[in-house]
Image (cartoon, rainbow, N blue to C red; front, top):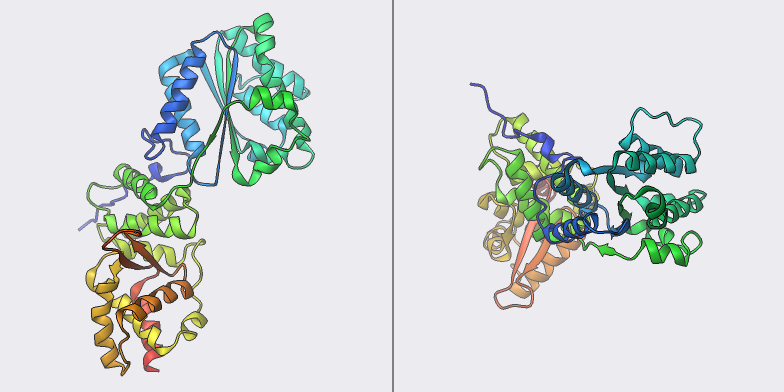
Length: 399
């Protein structure tokens, strides 16, 4: 019998895919879309927004989604121009990419930066078109010798409002994306004087990091696009969300990559579904995952090994991505009797669980749900294959 793939649209999990919806970024999407629609329907000729934030929190996909929204609303009256400045590396190459967006056949060899800028503007003017330019990773141009040239580019863009009235009568909007780690160099007054700041940096949007709930909603939406309906367990999505929120700064790209790789693994195994154990197997060899050094297990005392074994078996028994301290405690007491260990009281047990989470951080995660409320519970997850970890723990306990 031929097994059917559950990963039916893998392209929806690629980095360059622009989805119809942006879970947890729809408010920002609507704000930018309405702003630029108003701009392109006004008498103004230049405007800009700067989007700032950490890696993997939706800066690029938000900008490109807004561009698609504007193209849908405004049709051929607008030309979108997306340039990744980090890949282009030089201001000259950035300008060349802008020209390529409006006229791919125009030769760029032998033209100066000033010439390229004017060619871009003149072609738009001749066609009676406006443009939204996305300058992704703009801050990367402000490191080293390119800083002065990058400042000049922003100055020329910001002065379009003066030139357009007299010469061109076109409208240009800019969405500039700056990664948090480039922010200091980008805002360096050596490159950006007061006049550029006043004209180019009037509108700023800072995106907060995704938390585990944000990531869960993003993954659930992407899973609905990529996989057969009902083939991805919410436990798997929760395990990815918690790991990425806790260990990878809420980077949604990493979360989506893990989901894609887990789907490929499930297909390769022919399981017909994607569950928490597929995620654990992917995480165990993922480049972002801390390596489980046998020394970490050797450093644990016998009682903590028993407790870790109890957590592993509770997860296996429950078949979910998380178990509570109560789930673990039942098995823990049975194992203490088996291995001649005196069971600790609940308060001490909670302390041991938290210490294990620290000592095996990345591999084992411990969180308190309902923090600050009555009915709080300690939740435990393990990010490596359970069978493999159980075998190692048993070797140490019985060796």
